[in-house]
Image (cartoon, helix red, strand yellow):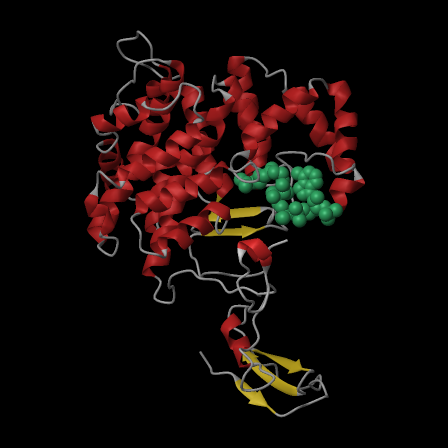
Length: 447
Ligand code: ACO
């Protein structure tokens, strides 16, 4: 990168006819000095600002960006989003095409390896994943320790973290072979742990993986099999789940991706880093929103009560859960696909009575100035809960259904961070506005 050049004060802006340069000129009005900062890929390097000082004692300029609303923390080649146009692509492939033509395991391969697999590569990939679906019997004892009403996301966080105590080789994060092994294990075991957590809450015996079934088919088997000698997933539900898994596989630098990169930057093992990412996803502003949407629809209760609820949203009393997005200022392309899948599932399972309420919320919100002005559209979580409920999942499982496929995106982001020579341990700066030095006050003198 070109080095920053400091020029003498200049009060005049560039003449319109001057040849364009890939630089930004900043004038510090405190000193009158102007600085020319290189622009690369439409960004300036925050560290270049540090040259801007009022004097030798000055630490140098920083940018202040709470919640990283305008800070690129990495260079990535995995997922592209154009939030204004409602575009989402994995490795260049539009999400609509992947949802129509791909399956989750192929999409996971694409995210992690960068290219679609050949037939042989896909078979090998699926074989390895299906041969890492079993969990150590001690993990079962661990799960048994949870209370019957423990939230399955809490069980997921703890159990995935516990995997690091079983696989010591996972610490070898700079070894490609070790990373590959942990990737198979994580993608393979997430559905098993999720299903076991679900069965534990019901007091039902655990169902072991069936390698003859597809990835989503095996998951349904471990969740719902009862007395059948061989569980046969319903093909419509199996495909619906596969599409939902594709749609949730990655979403560039969202809260949990940022967490796995940040935690992983300390070079901890991938199980511990994944546990942190699942914890981030659990929050109601992130992957926990699908559960909250359903609670909200139940609270609204009827189509007639939607206008009153919207009034409360506009008064700032409550949020319309499943609406709004940091990046999408247009219809979330995933929500569009999910709406279609919802109708396919309802055709089989019967219409979810909450659908009418959801449609009315969407209809009003898409016309109402409050939502239009703020560009608030349905996000991925608005309709997923309705599908999951119709498929027989309890609400607490909804965020888990988000976490299972997101593992491929998390590991892709984690690996990209590890292999990027520019990345270091993540360590932001702060603007300190607290007390200056003061003397310790003994207890008897405190007010
Ligand atoms: N309901 C009502 N008002 C909303 C909503 C909502 N769901 N979302 C945003 N707004 C309003 C805000 O109050 C704010 O209004 P103001 O300008 O008058 O203060 C404005 O829209 C901008 O909102 P921000 O909170 O600044 O937007 P931000 O980008 O920080 O938040 C977020 C995005 C967290 C997703 C937010 O829209 C939200 O809380 N949505 C509901 C929760 C949800 O559905 N989360 C899932 C997101 S998708 C995912 O993570 C998988």
